[in-house]
Length: 92
Image (cartoon, helix red, strand yellow):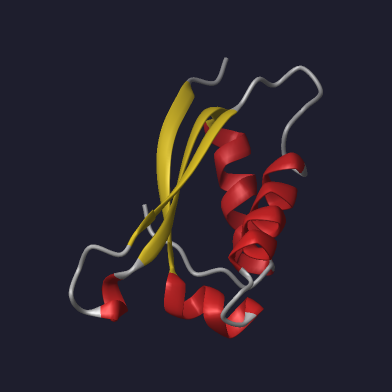
């Protein structure tokens, strides 16, 4: 049996701008959720929460955060592979 995880993913806004242009944060969120949906089973209950952090004076440190709960470790690894394949750079 796999244990369930709570993980925070951080997507630098500078990377999202490169991938989706300046106004593409909604599109970025949609694609991130598509990556997540691709690894979830029909009976998997996943909780997600997006938030922006632009509080740092240096824009280099601004990011879109995604909190994900309910994935087991195997699903989490598959999600991270899907994020990498889609071109996202993230840290947790």
